[in-house]
Image (cartoon, rainbow, N blue to C red; front, side, top):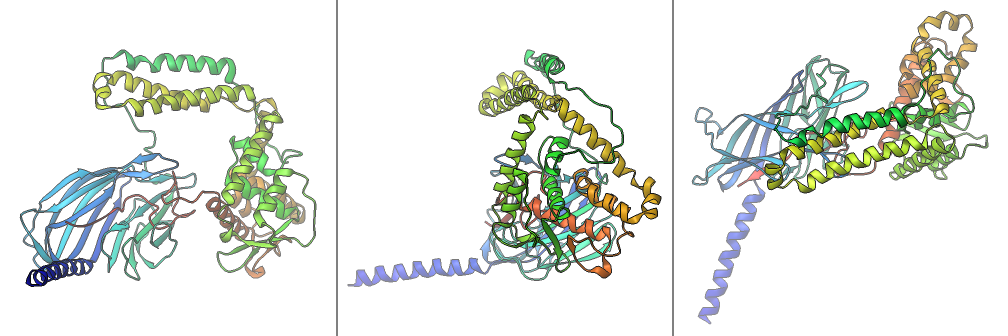
Length: 565
């Protein structure tokens, strides 16, 4: 009996220790997370983090994990370089006594800094200062440069009570947005305080729970940042015959393109009319060689102009697509499919609430348009075959390098490894030199280029608009879908901003404040909604993903997490 009581007492004490330990661990917290982030013109991102960590029971220190890979489409990832500039820590209220013990390691796509000493236990509040530089962690877009960052990271093992960050960029901040919560959240429990045109601070309005983060997107004018996308170079050359492989690859590839891959180019002259018997989605695909969400937006606007739907504004950023009460027959199969899948039997749909599976519709539209491009001889099937061969061999070569790139292969066959890799990249690049458009496609392309030329120089015709405004409002609407395709809708709208006395029949909004620029901004919102709905759901951000178009918490560069050890 005594043995039984002794055993039960031992179990009770052991359980109490574990429970006490778990309870203590649960009360660990980051009482304050402060950071200063400076984006330099050369795209280096200087980060200074000041993490105040409360140890509720003794520990050795903390570890900080910073992502060194940015997840992109499919299984690919963009490498991000993390360079430590300075690291130290001290007990709260004793800043003069600093410590600098840490170990650096790579942990499955993260750079880990394990801070503290194994022989020393600490307790209470300690402040950890980590200064580092991130490279290759910015995005470029057609109309702006963008900084898209996770600030603290959503992998911390403890909650964060307070978080503030200051961001400085080398150019004017034209747009900014912040997200909070778990990965994928679009909540915005955060506020901005502008310090200057190039500097802003962000503060949380509620604490972050475990698994939550603050993500910030900053937009700057196009050209603010140095374009380093093509700046990768070979660091060294080895005297290996394999390094010469890219030369015959380039020569043979160019010869095949010259023989089979060149289409007849046409001279571009201004055009005042869109191509006949063609709908915007098809025209856009011919122009850019692939269907994009912008082309779908142009088609939606065309359907509105044709009387199939109405665009209705409700609130500042809420837009409703509404079926017109007058039933009309849509002759084009692809456009009819878009119309049906957009509404899915409903009479109206909020652009922000397009069904999450709309990306399947987009994929179906892409296939339908692609078939039409080749079956109707806008594009050449023969040159498409050459394009496929180049792409297949290039991707196969890169895949093969990853499969055989063992330490032995890297040592014994570095020249061949580099040679095959460069040759594969050359073949992939050469696909852009293969003219897929056939004679008919080039004719349409030339017309579209001429139309773009006309829209781009619309200010020269402005006096004509004022002489006969009613006539030229018809011109505005007729060419508006094509201005969207070219990304010139705001420029086109500006030339007509004072001609409308009331909104067109297919647009419902505030009459007192309406002009064509308001309409263009509405179209931009529709385009962003289509872009967001066209992307399959993912727990990570996609390649070149924007913080303003489908952005969310956890979608940017950086972040990561950490905990005690």
